[in-house]
Length: 116
Length: 111
Image (tube, rainbow over all chains, first blue to last red; front, side, top):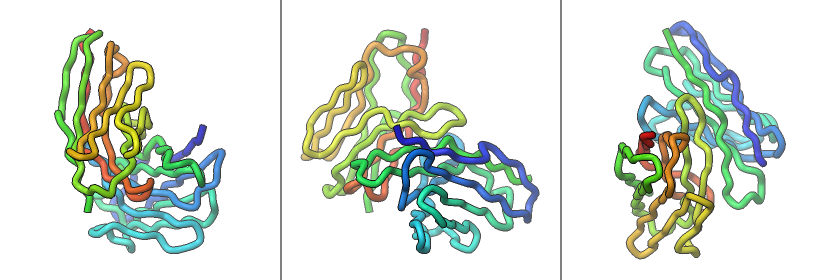
């Protein structure tokens, strides 16, 4: 089945630094990937839709200059949290679906970001 | 936009009993309803889904029902086992585009 790999699984960074999270579709091509954010004991909130070869579409309230998304190939999307602050600490999850899969989106294993 | 509500937020059942989680949605255009299981520190895993042209779908101990008129759908887990303990999320989508998630149900199966 479709596999989505996310890296790193956890990261600790200092305030003011930037962190890059990778999302890869291992056995399929994904023209669209989605990035979610999840706070403890809360639901998944869609941050942005990543489109291969074009600009990402951000949800209302998500700062595009803070959360940079790059989808340079059909198997890789990256989310960079720039100038991270403690309030950016969260669980970030990506998802993707093979073209023509009839909606079967697969989620990555998530990245736990802690900003100290 | 779509609003998905999920109940209950927590659910404890004895091993072997059934568990039912219910969701409602607001947008009648939604036509795809997946259910995800999320274990601590991991990403959500799709466990079952249903499309609007079907009223019920079953996969071994898991079943999902959909009432389009009332705009609600439910997850049923029978013969629960301790390994079923996790957080379950429902979601609604229009043709597999943007997904709207419920608030999650923390299920605990007591041995």
